[in-house]
Image: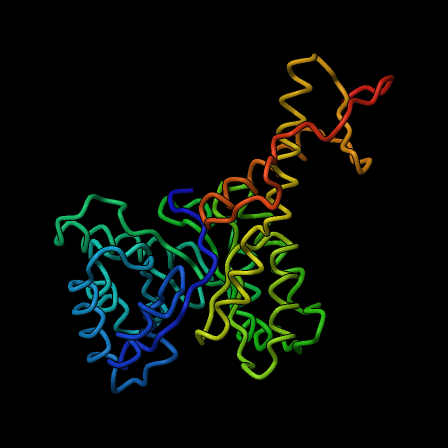
Length: 313
């Protein structure tokens, strides 16, 4: 994984000058300048010009920047790439990704554009968006491509492709999303990024959906409006209580190592093994990245005991 985990990816139509200016100060961890669905065919050229102009004028610090180009199967995507390649750009989102050949075509275009721009080869990463059954089945091959950093998921187009219907539990997309989590992990990619939620009136449903995405192994979510950012940040940021518990687990493991104890037991009765310890360290790392502080004043104080007579697995 080459880039830090990001919680929110806020979209903006690339042809809307006002929104392109506002999106960078809206509070998202990342900005996605959209050249695809949000831009009418007759405005693609002006949208590309907006993207190139904005990327070249960005002053640090700024949110991570991504550009969603048009599908590789359409005309004009090469022009999108030329507009998007800039030192400010972190990655390219590829909509409707369904084959390894699409990713290889984009890789070749990025190689040429980076060379013309004087950027080191491989600077700009690729984020394929899986929106079809074919894309799910081809994901493992796409994951093997060198520039691919993480998958995104497009729920609406995926449901259309399989003739499914959205429901409260997300059952129609659960299998596909779980496949992406497993494929990403096996390939050493970053966790996949959750799809947009289009009903701005249902924030409770949005929170439940975002929690489910986190629980099945996604990290971060695409957003279409700034009002969605607080929910996404809350879900993907460790709470003070979670961070406190993580510090206690690490302190217990260190205490056990010093005393050569094989089995470790928290005060609440939970055993601590390597998997629990690894998860605690990951929580601490996220807390440090996003500025969470432990709830306890002394999170490293001993709060646990060993379990005599039980071997550690």
